[in-house]
Image 1 (cartoon, rainbow, N blue to C red):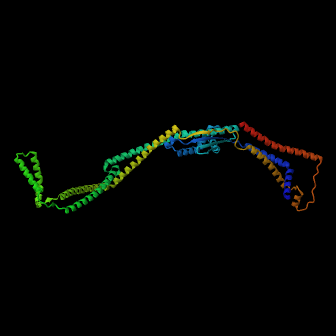
Image 2 (image 1 turned 135 degrees about the vertical axis):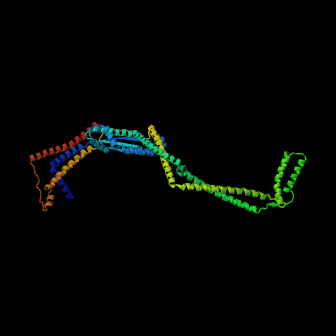
Length: 505
C-alpha cells in the first residue's frame, strides 16, 4: 500500500514539475479537438406522422380487401424512399439549387437514403423522419430544409396513393383491352375453322361429341331394352306354364252356346212371322247375336258339347298380349344393335379425322374460356377503379404535421466540447508523465533506492532565495491564468453554441 502511495506521489510530482509541458499539450489537444467538433455540421430532424384508414365497406364489397390495402401501403412505404422519389425531394427543396450535374444529383440522392426514414409504428400509423445536416447551409437553413423534406415526402405519399393507383389502374385496363382484342381475333379464327370443319363433316360436330353422345345413348337404351326383354320372356314363360295346367272346357249340359243360338234363331223366325223387315232394329240385333254365337256353338259341338273354360280364354288373351310385347322388344333390340354397330363403325372409320375434330374443338374451348375470363376481369377492374376514384380505397390524414426543429439532434456539441477539454487535460498530464519516464529522474529516495539497489542515506532539500520564490509565484500565476483561459475558452464555445441554437429557434 505504501509503495502504491509513493508511486502516486511520484507520478503527481513528475507531472507537476512538467506542468508547462502538460498545459501546452492540453492547449494543442483542445484546440485541435474543438476545431474538429466545429467542423461537424449540426443535424436537424423533422418528424411527421400520418394515419392510414384501411376499413371501407364498399371497397371490401367489390373485392378491395384489407390485405390488398396493406399490400398497397407496404408497397408505397418501400417505394417512397426509391431513387425516383428521392430525386423528386431533391428537386422540390433547396437541395436542387446546388445540383448542376447528374453526379451531384446521384450524390444528393445517396445522401437522402441515409437521412430519410419511414417507420411503421402501428398497423395504421407511419412516422416520417427527415434529417438535414448539409455543411453548405446554415443551421437555420438546415432546420427549414428538414421540414421541407418531410412535407415533400407527405406530398409524394399522397400522389402515389391517389394518382399513382389510378394511373396504374388505367394502364392495367389498357393491357387487358389489348389482350381481349388478341383473344377475340384468335377466337374468331378458331370459330371459323370449327364451322368449316363441321360443315364438311357434320357427323363430327363439336369434335365428334355428338357421335359419342349418340353411341352412349344407344348403348344405354340397348341395355334397358335387353332388361325389359328378359322380363317379358320370363312373364311369357309363366303364362305358358299356367295355360298348360288349365283345361280348355268345362263339362256340363244345356244352356250352352248351342242352346243360346237355337233360341236366337227362334226369335228371328218369330219376328219375321210378325212382318218385321230386315231393317228393323230388333231384327238387326238378333242377326248380330246369331252371328256372334255361331263360332262358340261350333266349338262347343266339336268339344263334345262341353262349355269353354273362361279362365283358359283369359290366359290365352294375356299370352297373346305378352307374346306381342316380346316380339316388339326383340325388334327394338335389333334396331338398337344396328344403330350401335353403325355408330362404332363411323367412329373408327377415320381416327385421324376424329382426332383433328377433337383438337379443333379443344382449342376453341380454351380460347373461349380465356376470353370469358378476360371479360370478367375487365369488368371487375372497371368497378374497382371507379370505387378507388370516387371513394379513395386508402384514405389517410396527417396526424402530426412536419415539425420545425429548434435544436440539432446531432452532434451533442456541448458534451463534445466538454469531453475535448477533459481529453486535453488528461492528454497533457499523460504526456508529461510519459516524458518523466523517458528522462530518468527520481522524485523520492525510495524510488532511487529501488532502482539502484543501493541504500540511500538521505536527501537534500531545495532552498530558494527570495528572488527565486517571487519568480516561482509569478510563473504559477501565469500557469493558473493559462489554465483558466483554457477552461474559459471552453465556456465561451459552449455559450456560442447555445446562442446559435437560440438564433435557429
